[in-house]
Amino acid sequence: MKHVTDTSLKSYSPYSNTEESCYIQGKSGIMYPGVRIENISFPLTISAVQAAVCNCLANGDVPSTLYQDKPESELLDYWLKAFGLDHKTVLPGRFETFDPLVRDISDIPEKLDELCNNALTSHSGFPVAAILETENGYVTGVNVEVSAWSLGLCAERVALSRAYSSGYKRYISMHIYAPKSEFCSPCGACRQVLNELMPDKTVELHHTKISLSKHFVQHLLPYGITSGTLKKKNK
Image 1 (tube, rainbow, N blue to C red):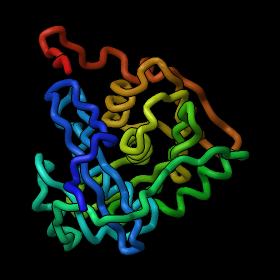
Image 2: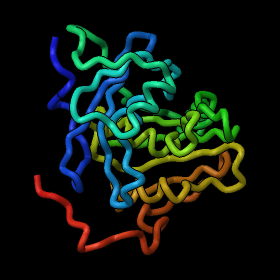
Image 3: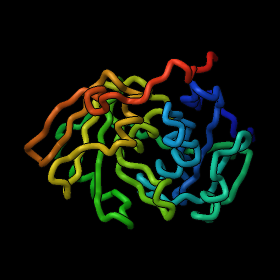
C-alpha cells in the first residue's frame, strides 16, 4: 500500500509550481490518471480530478473512487458529490492503469466518426471527436459534459489531458471532427489550451469526411494572451 503521490505523474504547473495528481477508479476496476494542467489564462487550468474523471468517462467507464492525497484539487466537493465518489488517500497494492495510446490509426476520418458515438453530450447534443498525434502514437478524445457546464471538457482538452496525464508530452498534430457542424473549428478555450501546450504544431479540421483544412495552432489564436510580468516559476 502506498500514498497516492506518484513521482511518475507530473503536472504541467509552470505558474504555481504545484504538483497535483490523482487516480480515478472506474467501475470496471481500471485506474485513470489525472494531473494538473495549468494555463496562462488561469481559469482554463484543468485540475487533476477534472482530468481523471473526464479520462474515465470518455472511455465509457463510470467513476467510482478517487485516490488523491495532498494537495486536493479545486472544487473537490463537486466531483465527490456529482459522481458519489469514495475518497481514499492510499492506493491498492495492485491495479491496472488505463493507457490511452493507440499505436496506429489507418483511417483517421473513419476513426473520428466512430469516436463521436462515445461523446457525452447530455446538454448540447453536439458530439466532437479529437485525435492527438504524439511522437509515441495517437491519443483520442471526445467531449465530456457534466452537470456543471463549465467543468466539462471539449474533445481537444480531453485528448491533451489524457496524453499529458499518461506521460505523452511531445505532440505533432491534432485532428478534430464535429459531424453536426457546418465548419469544424475549436472553441476559444481549446485554442488557448492548444496554444499553451503545442503552439507551433498543426491542427487538421475535418469539416466533413472528405473535406478538411490545416492550420498552425498559433494562427488559430492571433494576439493570444502573453505577459512578461506573469512569470513562470523555476522548478
